[in-house]
Image 1 (cartoon, rainbow, N blue to C red):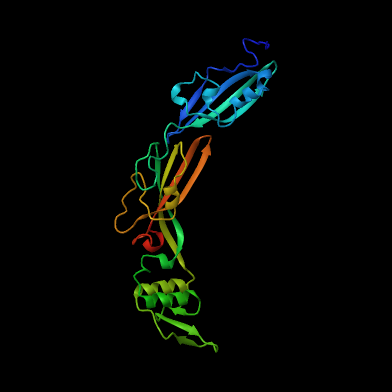
Image 2: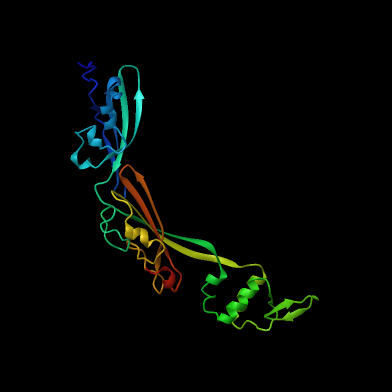
Length: 275
């Protein structure tokens, strides 16, 4: 017969009263619980199996409210103090909801509680992305490209492109810029400036739940896609592209972040990015 200590023997698992559980803003649950076993019991395979990562928390405490039956153990810390008792601090995580009901990343309803964030920032971009560059004629764009390549130079006083000959003479280029905006770009390029600060907006969705990214979501990365939630209407011909998808896992709780990027006027190139 197993030795008994304060009502515990080598087969006993004694949950303590302080079961703690918290739900995040995205719907996932994390919990902690304190369990006491004897030293002799801790060394048995049966007791150790109860605390294995991924095991149900209800396996060590059947008295946990039925609602939390989805919680699975993520990690355990052990404290062996004087005497014959072992204290285990057990952490668990999970969710009663799936992350996605249909999960194609195109605006359909989801089961978990998403949070959204709109972020705008500035980043350097080449002049060829500027809204005043796009309407230029192909001829002006070609000449500006030659200027960027260093073969031509630009005289802002005369408004003409030129080359420096081998004998250090100045020779006007055979073709010249025609549009005023093209000449303004040329003046900046001649001064050594080739980029501008471009605005970039991203819409981010964060969710937690029981389920990984689905095949349709994985296939939408890098394609034009309508964000879920209620992103602000940019108007005109701008649209969104799914540019980032990341997922982490804690036990059986999956945390997923999807990020869409807003295009400039004209939208993302449909040939390259349309599904």
